[in-house]
Length: 115
Image 1 (cartoon, one colour):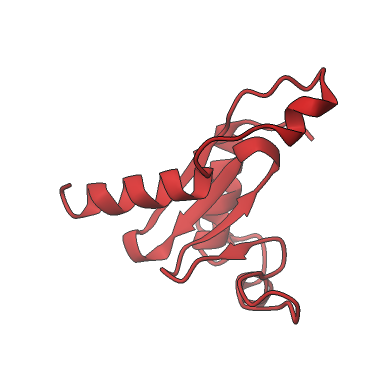
Image 2: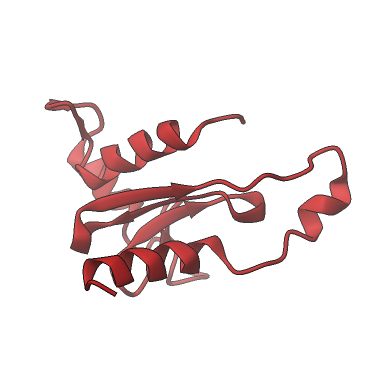
């Protein structure tokens, strides 16, 4: 799948706004609520395609650090995409670096408290 940061942010904002987009209900609130609650019997930090953070944030996470995150406590969404050389299958296994989720959580949390 190919997408842009803007598209991911729009989708994440739709979920943060409980399925509403520009004042119109696109997805039912019940479906959104189901997607972002603990749903897996194997992992208690996973909903339906969304990872659930103890801080209240939830996010989608793709290969090599592609992330779309909602932080309801700050009423904000953020996306992060990293360049990856898809011509080499090995590159998907060796992305390395700090987790994108942590980068977003730390940055937004610090900004919200003026740090």
